Length: 551
Image (cartoon, rainbow, N blue to C red; front, top):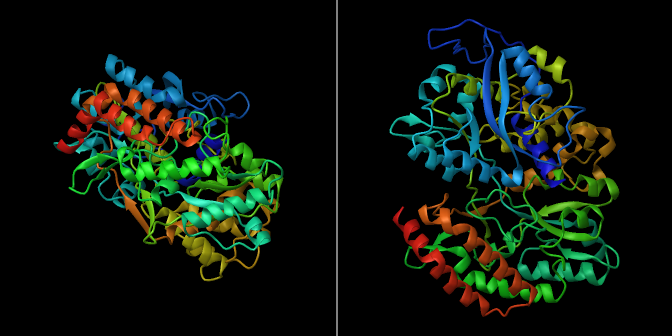
């Protein structure tokens, strides 16, 4: 469910599926065989694009559709003569490993999605096409405007004048505390600020059995998940315990500066040890889910109505809409908490972006630019006819990346608020550059009741426009809180794997996860943290720290 909702969110944020007239120019150019540099022009002869594709095994396609053959890929083939073939497919959890194997064997599809470490590896191995010229000639105005509004993105993937990748425009993120406000109100509790406040609320929820006999205070990480986001997965803050560390000025999983200005791994610091001690106490008191790290899905306790607190990003309503469906009074609201002792709301900064890369041997690299142009631009009239009202996600759209203007979230929230308040007419919203913001405003009054500036659940009509409820609710509820937040971001000093990490990081991460869980569960003493730090350094951590400092 969580993955599906995230895919749905990403599809709505990035895709501009509005109808519009797009010229279909199928003229050849002299750039190469069947090449066509017209940004939204189709090909006169079929152009096949082979890709590696990550598949969510739980995703439900429409009818007999598949990731390779669906309404979007068929439309792409019919409208532009671009034929997408899957060189290979891998389950989402195994995708990175499959990409690494392709790189190591130099058996590459025409294009695929890679992470930062893999991008650097491919550049070093001279496996990638230089996209500088095709981006300049074939990049659509909308695509270029998006990258121009995200300063530094293209520069970060340009080496010695060569553009080696098309990066996603990573959405800003920070984990907030989501709480059943209806429970807070019923118990007469104030909204939280500090860790102590959070502890008090969790205990009150449990003591008063707000979710029944087995009320869960704080929802934690599910089976196979991480206790916190890392420098490789910093964008995924859903259902982990990152904020509890941040409030103690602890940043496990990322690389920070020590008192001497040198890089140190956040998981080895005294602040992290202190937080583990706190979590150990909270777990013993029953404030944290007893099935931490064991549940197949952290959402199950939220959907069932048993839980009162979880941590997640502004778009968390996409993941809990079933909870609201099951209990219309479930008033999940976000709070900028917990703060640290100085009153700062801390978060690590998003790293670990995804990149589209193109095999240097591919004869039609401009086709990849076109696919991204099509993804972000106003669609041809045939799109509305073929796709109708089915929302395409990363599972249908080949080489899907989140691509939007740098201020897309702020604009979407602000324009929707102003439209509801009667300050802005729908026609005044920038439909060309912020198509989804326009769609939000167009549907907002179907689901949001007066007063328009109160986002408690009783002032919403879910049945008024079920397809758009989660979108409007997420933006006005979570988005408005997030965009107005004063966040102290701490960015990791390393954002990709070093040489020694390639061979040692998996074992070191396993050591870290197992040790920390044992400490929290009480099956190992807190002093085991010191033993962990020694083992971590001995088993490669010391050399890795040296490499991070030398970057």
